[in-house]
Length: 95
Image (cartoon, rainbow, N blue to C red):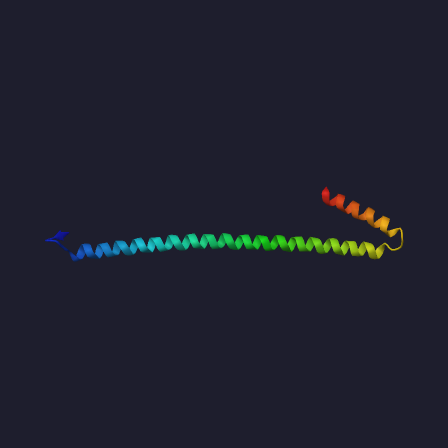
């Protein structure tokens, strides 16, 4: 391919083509890695948001139940009844 110290046009074009192919392969690999990292990060954020929403919903349900118990049970003995209800509720959660 090399004649008299000069590069023939055929080998020059093939070397350019080889460089272009290698660059395209590298770009595809980098884009794939970045895409996978982005997808994993997005999935992590979605899972964290779902956990936060779930904890918030559980907290709202507990508060609403306690408010409902306080509204239903009124009077002086209601504190004793409320403590029994809360302890049974906590036992149910523990089980």
